[in-house]
Length: 488
Image (cartoon, rainbow, N blue to C red; front, side, top):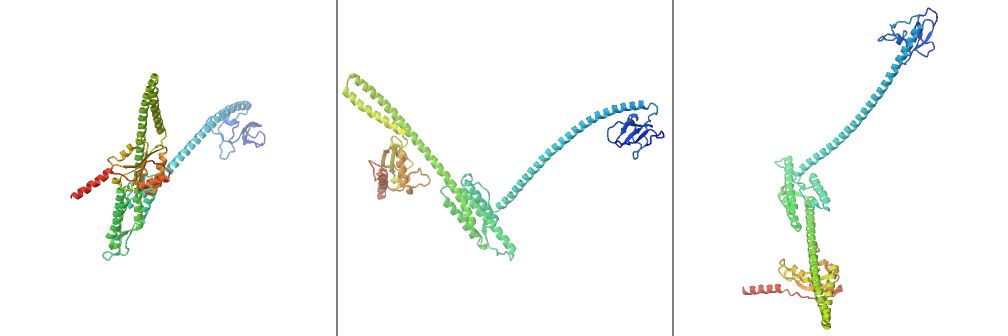
């Protein structure tokens, strides 16, 4: 740019190219510069009244600045004042710029926090949606099962309370069996009927009649099967099975016209269901019987312990009595009397020792072989053992009012290991047990003579054994009956 006086003072393009504008004071370039978007010293700003827009002269679309121009005289002073004002404004810009940066950072952090919170809420909403979908699937499945259950109930198949449901070993088998029963009904494998039946010369009406009759008969059969399950007991399974098989025959007889009958496959499933109920009831009854026998065994053991305790107490008193007598005789110098008392005292002490042995050795006791001809016949014996001090007390208890006649004793002997001898005899006659379920029922189908041979075979010494039972009450009753018959 020319530096002649003809060039007026104003903002012009920076000849160095470092800034957009530089101030020309009419005679030379000053240090005042202006760059777009960059904080810089700008005398025009300082010289421009508040509220006046600053527009460089050669900007595109720029208008003439309204700020007063720097006077030619006193320019240095004006420039100095403008520079000071520029510094003041730059400080304000820096101050408020930092605050704005801090506010922007705080605003950014707040926005980031809100975004993170929104993400968490979105995750929660997505989890809720997933759970709702899962719940919906469950509800849909239940609705389907309910509809299927209603369809099965039309044929008389209900989920009634089955005895084997509470069984640990049979519950799984029962659940599988019930599923097979339902599948058979759904698949049309429960009944069979003709497919060529017409009604009023109409094949469609004939098919409808066959379907209705099949459903009605199957419903009746399933009701009978349910009643059989509910009525079955531990010992009447054959009777319940016969009752259900009779229902099959009745369906076949009533459905002769359309050849309607219950399929053997479906009848077999229902029979298995009935068998599971009986098996569970038998197991429950056996457990109750075993528990009853255990309580009886404990009762007998307590009675034996009480008898032994009472006997020991009696012997202790007797020993003390003999000891006092012996001391008195010795003090008097009666040697012969003292010897007799000493011998009796030794017998008492031996008896006390035996009682202590019996109390300490729970396997010691009496093995007995008894029979009751009048109650069970000539070929049934009971083989057992007792720890009672008086073993006949146990035999008398067995022959109380629960049986018509008293038991006859064939053998009653003491053994140090009575439990082992009893066990060997039970194993020897295991195939002849009358009760195969409750092994505490110690009755065997054999004769007293065969038991004696078994004792000899197992090398068990028995001092006394009676083969033939006396059965006085039974024989007297038979004789009285014969006399009454003869008198008639």
